[in-house]
Length: 216
Image 1: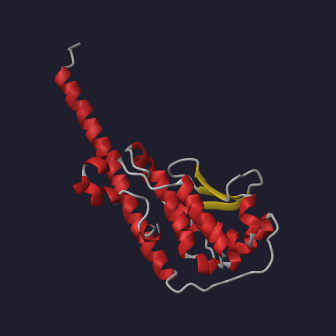
Image 2: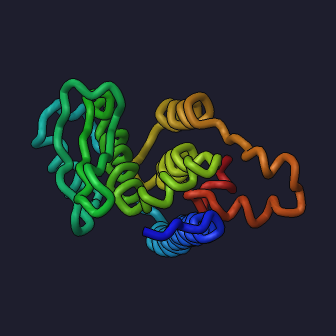
Image 3: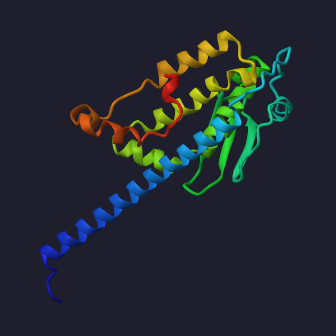
């Protein structure tokens, strides 16, 4: 058998790395496009939100979740399972995917049931934003040193604040959402952004959010 040339090995590895890089960039750019389309759609839908306030506190059960979905006209996208009550969940809500192309599963924790307003806002956070985000693009952003997860969460929390009147959120709940976003998901700069100011605009576009910034 003939020996394999080191040059050929190097060129093959370089080509493979380049293809992987181009694939990652393509996925991230596709995620940006999806985010911009989502922002445009929701800004249009909620340009004149109707304030809805329901008296009383919802019981912590699946029926309350189903009622809130109808009360606030929250539509479940295709390929989404739930939302399901998760009594052991410490957060208000959680959206997970078990694979890149798998369905999204939405869970709601007891902390979301302090009011009908917060329950509706939590469901919108998970279903209207997280379920429509590109998880693969967010993953590549994280691997590239960008704060993909943080950007995705800031988009969802900012969406809750944008729709505060729609859900009838009181000042306490609005302040809670703001403090949660500021404490757990503060805006962080990528190392490249700090060193290459002229590229700040383009690097900023790699965020998972496109309408959250004015609210921060």
